[in-house]
Length: 181
Image (tube, rainbow, N blue to C red; front, side, top):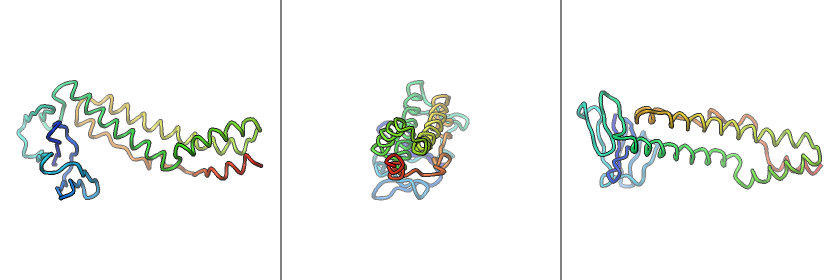
């Protein structure tokens, strides 16, 4: 396994078996682009070639386990991973229902409630139920990151947003039609 460390912070950015430096940055596993990391600002280390007890300003590598040098570094690692998770959460939800669409559903919900329009309310409820399931998934991953006790545990926490993919996409225009009936 190889690890890619940003020199300025000594923070491990990626751990992989396939890391390549290109003119436009680094590519990890042939599909993850790291355009800001290059041979000048990052270092690539082979885990297999590290001494048994490797240490730098932020990390230790003891008996095959990456860990933070101190509690502050561990918190920094967790916060970085949570920030990535949060950004991906926002991108995932917005790819289905952007902020404007969500706000429109909220307004339509109020209108449908005043009209006692159960068809419209049921459709909007499906959107909120899906968003809640995505948030539940996010919070379970966030909690796992917070509870990790070392860097290796943090890096082993992964997520796949397809696990909470919609089973039925509700179109805003369809709900507007239901409310206006």
